[in-house]
Image (cartoon, rainbow, N blue to C red; front, side, top):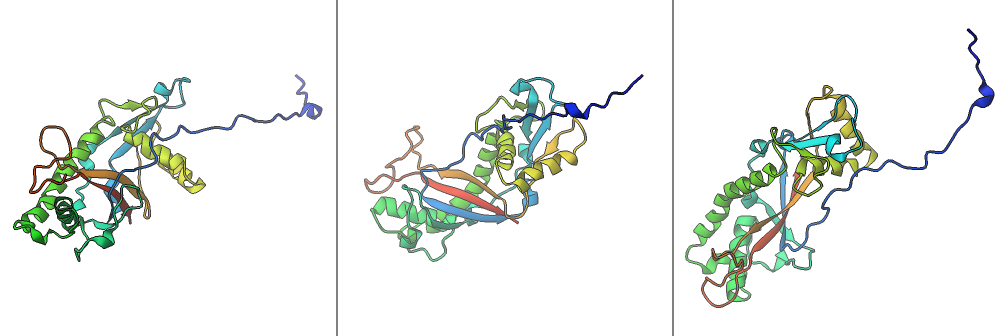
Length: 254
């Protein structure tokens, strides 16, 4: 047998179709009154979001078969939104926190102050209410309600027995959204996905992990609800409308 080495036939062609990652469903948050800032451990969120790739290789050209995603909502940490630091919003619907007379600008104090502003048409301090302490405590109690509401949203992103596919492109496929935010980041952020996969056995589920200085951003709303589904209500002293309170939450990880 002759092994013909024909270097004169060495050839090259251009790869002119660049690879592209899917686009996240949503990248912006709007229509909020205040910024709410918190700092938490990155490890607090490391066992919430999961994905899996087809093993050992992608088996088809169908998005539905390429990847699967799910969450473990029970691992979502307790978050003290009521203790969040409130700053001014740059959103067109936003408010200047400097106009509020409250010395301690945390959610649980700013929330009642905004109630006072809406009811009176301008006065920005809850000391006009006889039940000021109860109004503050309400925000602390609602931390648990918000945890339950967020866990319900996480469940929409699938669970271990009912996983979402790569073809589920909505914002509620939250594990997919976490992955795509990494893949649309810098080279080092894309490398983080590679590191996760290298540390995961073939065919096993991979937990999406976070690092210091990452941020997790979403909207929370305290509804001024009359109970009839109409949203903003005037079932308070006076005739002014008391509006829903919307906070853009930024959790900075450490």
